Length: 231
Image 1 (tube, helix red, strand yellow):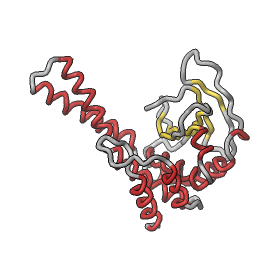
Image 2 (tube, one colour; image 1 turned 90 degrees about the vertical axis):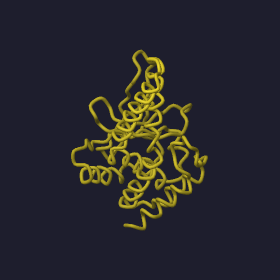
Image 3 (cartoon, one colour; image 1 turned 180 degrees about the vertical axis):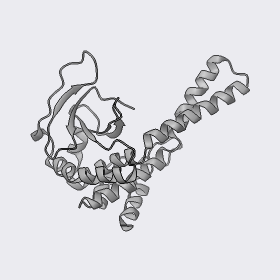
């Protein structure tokens, strides 16, 4: 999981943006303090309306999970448009976005959909399931390498390859699952999830590569439409 060096934490529990600068790298330069006016208004609107829906869905679907979400924004203009979900050392879920991604979005529907998508990864325990798959892949490849008479070095290398394969094994499935739940949360918050998923039409298509981590954009949009139709 990529850890962004300089981020601004915005507490999702509040309805207003309260930036607190943090540095994840010891000895790093002082981070830029991101002011509320630096963040696109469409993000503030989306966060305010998505907050209760994401938290309530989390508490209802996965009552044993920590549902006290934090929002992290990487303010660097050099960061590529990106969003991901992770947890901090205390197990608190973090939904992280680059400012370049937020600026690249056309409307609050698109922002809301991405917030829902990343929140869904946590609610559906995708990080936990991915780690389990990675450990299983590492063990399997270790056993195979040892059975074939591999050296300790070969077994270690096989373990690393197995972990990578295992981690990617369900990536596309997880993305589609997060799209569906994220779309339904977006819709429940009063946004148009299908309009939000239109962002997929403006980004490179992941295609159907064997080791690709994301599904085809057309499949993702179709999944969103199906999820919304179920409501």
